[in-house]
Image (tube, rainbow, N blue to C red; front, side, top):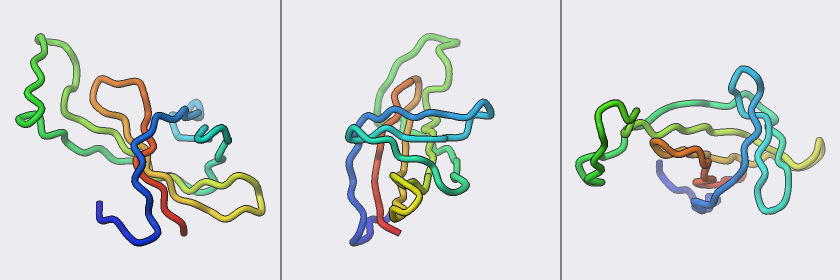
Length: 103
């Protein structure tokens, strides 16, 4: 991803609440609940496994798929939208807030 002037890179752990269908509903960041206010975008990228040198037993699971969500969030109905890029690394349960940008 290309950084822009109004984007901040963070890589901090966050809690994400999902709908029953698996779509992000809200993100807890910096002691606040940010509600998802628009349709999120979901994709996967591949980890450079040849650089990480991870060894794993057969059947360990997917060691290369990095999961991403880009969500537009706000604190309240009148607050400005911000865009959060969320990332979950292979075999991790923890979501990271990779970046924040203003819309």
